[in-house]
Image (cartoon, one colour):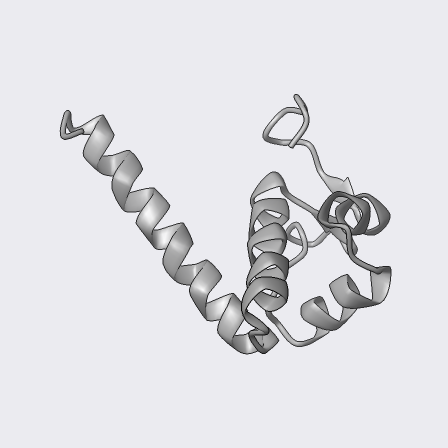
Length: 93
């Protein structure tokens, strides 16, 4: 990811380019509910959505995972990241 602020939104085209996927891949994942847009802003995405999309694409590519399984794994990885951050915050490394 670039040095953009965490509140910066990415357009559909930017997200597709940063994930090295076609626009249609992003649109299909949004329509299937596997990737969410930024609140009420249509076709714009948060940095967290970028991380999620990259993870999903990597899982689909590396393991030939179906999109739903890649999304489930992305959910689990996001939870694991949050738990690790909480552990660090509480002083457990």
